[in-house]
Image (cartoon, rainbow, N blue to C red; front, top):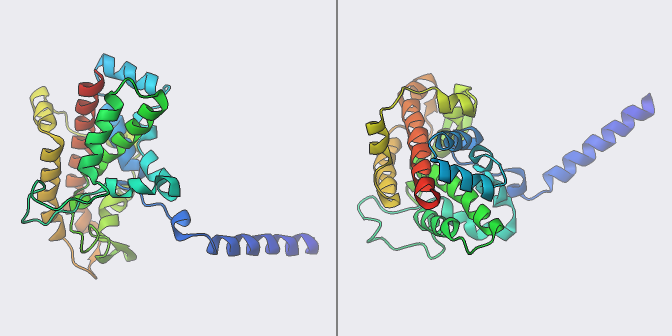
Length: 268
């Protein structure tokens, strides 16, 4: 018995030491909208697909759901092979400058990414594997576009450098909007996708109207308000949740409906 106890301690100590020596990006993969949020976006979109788009997606993804593939773009971020896709998760443009006038990131941005993915998914001459890859990215990036801080300021890394306390735990403004409000709400992605007031067909069309750039500009307008909700060192909790979570839910729902619109357009 004494021998087994000593052996167990050795194994646990070895595991702890090896974990501490791992690269930090292998220990922490950043998730945008969090897993629950992205899966809710995919689930909402799946409910608004037309028949042709639904069939095409089923064929390309071999039956895997949009909810399941929605976090793929985050899962591959720890793989050096996919590092070039990192800048595709966001766009930083000064608030007093339009996207068209701003200097572009030579490595791309989320607007470039979405348009590139749409082109690739629509291209039937590409292999099924390639189309599946870009479809998975497309599902994720349309979700990211609707998290306002993915269109935030470069100087604070979209709110990542704004350190706050979330229910007395260390956090930052970006993380609060990415996942912590959603996680605190404690709904599954299927519950999040279902529990919302009914929208009329006219309201759905209004939300789906516009282009990728229009949706990016909408997020850029929202993020200026988001920045005013907190400062470094603030303690955020129930009141912050009450005041801001309705916008999170609206953005998730808009994202799902617009993802469905895109997929219906390019595959339906």
